[in-house]
Each structure stands twice: as structure tokens, then as C-alpha cells.
Length: 101
Image (cartoon, rainbow, N blue to C red; front, side, top):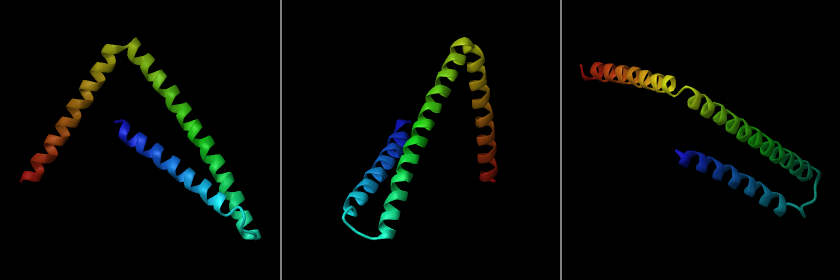
């Protein structure tokens, strides 16, 4: 389950590192367009960091709330999980039986 998260985090880190490398490589290039592009890239990187931080904070906050609710109502959570599993199984079996015809 952590594999997609690690992959996404790695992809974002790699993208940020590539952007920083591009900024470093173009540091000595003169020109108004290059300068403006570097400024926009730096601003985009900063916004991406802020968004990633906000998403991470919200995910942690949500996980804490879910954990608290599960600890307060373990049997209700178990019942909901079983009911969801039964419904998914029912619809999956029904779909497979239609495809066999």
C-alpha cells in the first residue's frame, strides 16, 4: 500500500530536483524571457511545497480522526466493513455471472 505513496513522493521529489537543476543550469543565461521563466518556476516550486505540506497535514489529521472513531466504536466499524465486503462480493459475483452468459 505504501508503494504508490512512495512512488508519487519520489516522482515529486525528482521533478523538484530536475527543476532546481534546470534553474542552476540557466543561472548564467541572460535574457528577459529566461529570467521570467526562472521566476515562474521558482514560484511554482514554492507553491508545490506549500500544497504538499497542506495535503500531508490534512492526511495526518484525517487519519487521527479515523483512528479515534475506530477506537471509540470498533464493532460499528467492523459491521460497516463486513457489510461493504458483502456488497462488493455480491456485485462482483453478479457481474461475473453476466459475463459468463
